[in-house]
Image 1: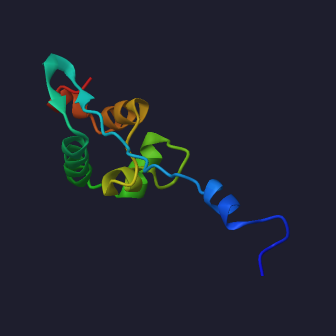
Image 2: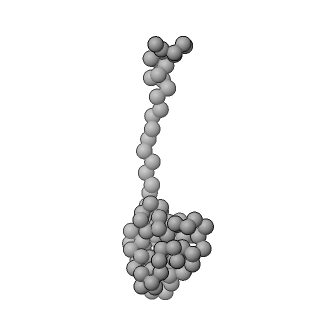
Image 3: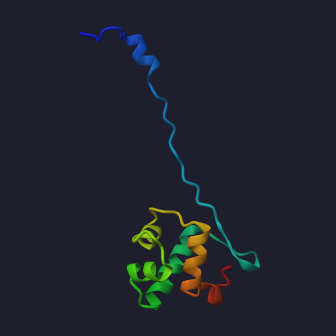
Length: 102
């Protein structure tokens, strides 16, 4: 039994048209006109973290990110790093010395 004051025509008018949200992964701009993709930066970050023998949580603590799992989310691809996060990670891991970042 339909609700009072509600018809099938009203149902069609109330349908939401949802559009998917696409997260754009912009390239990371580096010194000397070299461009890295996020995947390349993440790979470089992970390799350097392992060389320094730091866990994901230890690196997160050194970077002083407020969210406990920022590094984990970036490395797993769940989160796209912001420019500030990239600069902080690069500074803490000293990526800019070896790889000319920023």
